[in-house]
Image 1 (cartoon, one colour):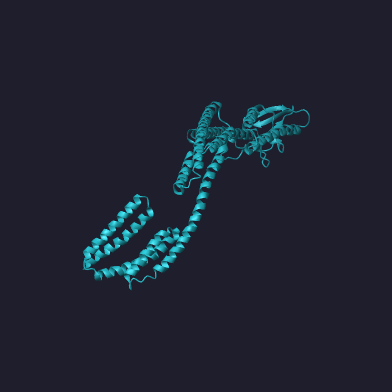
Image 2 (cartoon, helix red, strand yellow; image 1 turned 90 degrees about the vertical axis):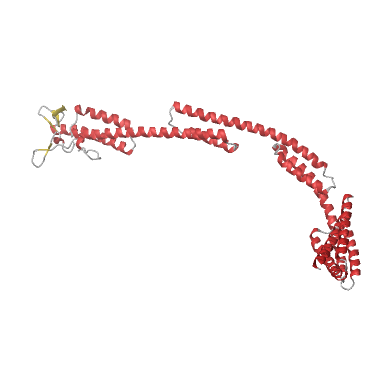
Length: 437
């Protein structure tokens, strides 16, 4: 097919067939209606011809008007097909069209060009149709690949979900969180589409089996938990019975220690059923509170007594700190001895005052002892005999302490220990004096 060169009247070169186009743009198709005589003619009998690369081909007969009107009629038909092809291409490129439908239509148009009753650049139109066909085939291939990729992704995701469910079923002990996660997995599972039926059934069996396994394991756990809580209730009722039984005890130290042990045992017993655990605890705590309230009242009374004892010992200390061992050692010793006896008889003082009061008394004792040591070093001609005497006294008081302690008289034992300690210090001083001679 040739196009007339309007300047010379000679045939112009035909547009390059689509197979020779090397770019990616769609081959252009010129409209036929503006210059229909470029692409065809009408003979004297009214036969309409289209010019092709192989020569002229009759496409119809025109008797309804002038030859030019006949050419325009067939050229408009060509342009209608050209518009249809462009529309197919536009919808295909934009993604709005169905590639399969576009391929079918374009193929049908292409295959019918050889006999189509059209006047226009059929070669260019054929090239454009080939372009559309190629694009549609690529789109179909791409869509197929996307479907395969989507299917592979869907299979992979369901495999991941099945594996996670199996891990939960095998290992998890976070029952609520794990149960919630399995429900979330199920919800997501329903949204994952595109898996073939066989694979989907296999994966669903894995997931379903895992979920059932988890539910069985969770059920067993809570059944065992119910059993343990029933046992804990029984044990706590036993502990309450003992706690209530000893709440009237006056053995403050041992009973307080036993309540401490009972608390440890209470914690070790574990939780009772929810509907009874709090009530059991209230009973147990009430028994404790009763005992410790009684003890607190007794200790408050004792603390008042200890405070009085501290005041009396302060009065003794005022007397003791007036002792002048340097002027009259024997009188000082006698006065100190009387004060020590009264000190022991007074009894205990508040814990926070013990160090202070005993420290002041010891300072007086040290002063008298120092004076006596000094005199002994000056007057004792028989240091060894004196040391032996001190040793005897130490042993005597140690023996007294042992006998008193065996008899259960801790106060006298303590007094004898203190005296033994005093004599032991004097013994050490005497022995030191002997060593220094």
